[in-house]
Length: 129
Image (cartoon, rainbow, N blue to C red):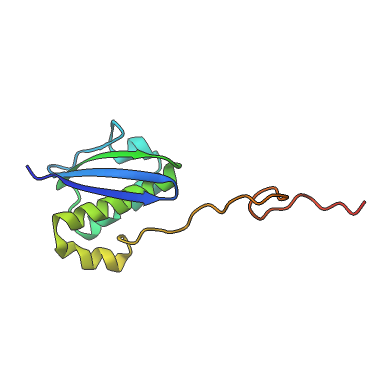
């Protein structure tokens, strides 16, 4: 049985994906199904986009370990990992996934907090007197 392995990252989240031909069973950190782990329908829709574009929804089993960051960052990491696993399975998927932007790692990171400020750019309230 073939196992396709891929890694996805976004913000502080890292997702390790193991994909095998199967009937669409998904396990994320020991929890069955995307929706049971990610809780939000919008995140699940975002994650499943690479599978929908390549018409492989329900054709593979996924065992996913994801850690770091919040749910949104983890969902982005899983999406990138799924896209990379599909390309590892078949190079024919690369053009369509590339066109949709699913093979590009989102480079945005949290800006560091500066001294003398409340956050990265937010200032403390100005008082004239």
